Image (cartoon, rainbow, N blue to C red; front, side, top):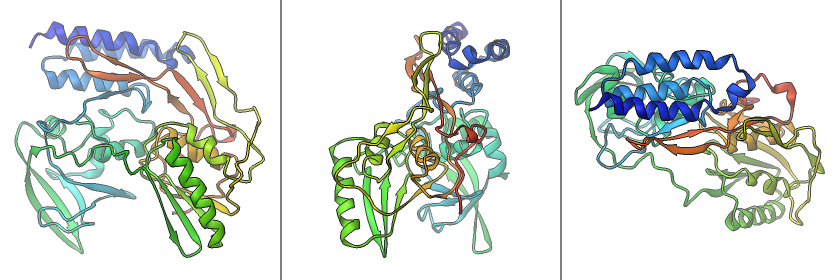
Length: 378
């Protein structure tokens, strides 16, 4: 492969990244970024080096919306191992090749999972460690997935079998797992993005993607009626599987509450080279209440996977006192962060990437320094 072609693509990436709002807010950061760029370019020899270099450049911004996107195809090689985080433990979400569901994955090639999280942080643009954990097991892009061939081979060398160790009920079992063609198990699924459960005097509304459409509105109205009929005391808005989408879901939900007024996120657009305030967090918004409103206590459940508009949703409810309790685990999205990315492709390898153009600040400035929205209880 022609090294000059790799460099041309990286220079294109660089040209878009230098327009990131970070450099308009803090010009001093640009010299450090230039230094990183020249270091990475000097190391390019192969396609894998190229992908790693591009990832390192996007990691500079500590921004989950400025990132490289390499979608899996059925031709890509991986270990199709479904898993999830429970605190600091990585657990199987189903039985897998004779290993029982909820067995803990403790190492790959004798490297502890905690060490691999640190290694993956150099590859995954992130706002906190929780987003690294989320993306390395749940994001359908092969450059982030810890079990993808591209990552396993870059860390452990070019081979097709990898030792994975599991712990279950006090026993440790180490097996060699082969790379196989990707079977789609990580793919985004928006078809069943909303549903609810009634458990005793609690209603749980599961919103797995932020989609504001007629179905969303109809489910909210339907659930208001059910909560009234069944004398439901608590509504839990479950955003634990929600990686984002359309922020319009937030205002639409608040209209179904008894809230009189609230404050939105502050949105500052830097796409034209200067700060343009779209909304300000000091502005008071009068709630145009829907005829059907929830009259009960509202909680919000979040996790490492709660990112982007879902994070904005949870923080808005928290900062305005609409959600009286936050449950689950820390969010993968930082409360104050960059977003509203523009999409691009490099000219040669057509590497897809995004670059944020806006800065978002939470309604309550007292929480500006928080690295995540943390639960009130686990």
